[in-house]
Length: 227
Image (tube, rainbow, N blue to C red; front, side, top):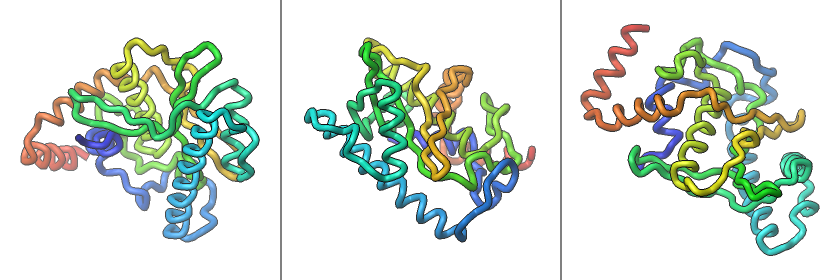
């Protein structure tokens, strides 16, 4: 089974490179690239640990709303409190057996009415969130550039599709599903985009899945020649 992130990258933005993504809005880097990348990974892992602890406290009826003091943790907890969302799962597995791909949702919450909400948590990206290589994604998402933000939007659109397919009887509040980006400047919410044509995207993934390795190499060569 292929990871969702790798499947999306292979199908829709295979030539994205952090070092070549120099177009688009960004804030100045405060650290060398290597330190920024390492710091982002460390903060991301710390955020995953916080989410696990928060969900465990909630399941054990402990005080999860006032147990964390870190800047990013506080931003996340405050957002959930403001929106009356109750954390029920972290790193929750989803899969699509037909497309043979899977992933883990960072955080699953419930509304007071019992609907589920999916969140992809991100920490940082101060210098790269909207940076791209001037290359569009591949069809059917060719109207999007290959920035990390658009990559995240695509990811969330597919986890929503996977959740609905895996749990057709569970009600999902799509209006609250989002990317939550924690940073020193505060919390940014990037809502799930229902306008992204994930069904056509799934068809593209299905066709790519059925290609042989030689076919994939030929396809990539042809794509490069056109550009």
